[in-house]
Length: 138
Image (cartoon, rainbow, N blue to C red; front, side, top):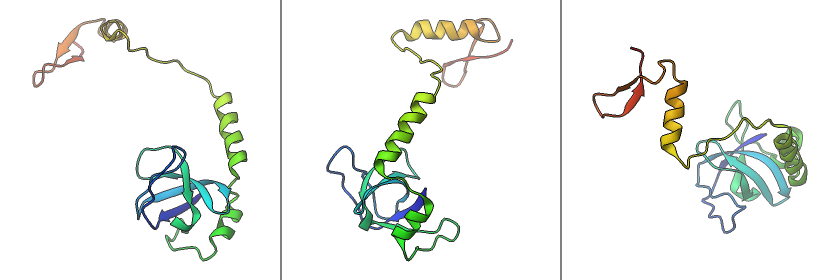
């Protein structure tokens, strides 16, 4: 991965582009072509997206200083092409084990299930300050 700073505001025009503000830190995770990176923001939530290479200043992670040869730094870091990155992401997803998911259709039922599984066997205390239930040991 390669660290960079966005130099100019970039307004995404398509869903696969990364909306970014000047000064925002990003990680370059793939290169689409010589003019576009696939990057992910560091300081906020958000998935990866395309951003123009010319909008990014590549920096040395240890010193924070700009790298004079951005394309050389990207090549040395082994940043994959988009096709390779997509394959790696798909391979990772396919090798992951799904642990399960919560269904929120009936939150009352889920609350009862959580109470049943709690250490105090369903004895429920209430928070005096806001009246919300919390599990406590009696």
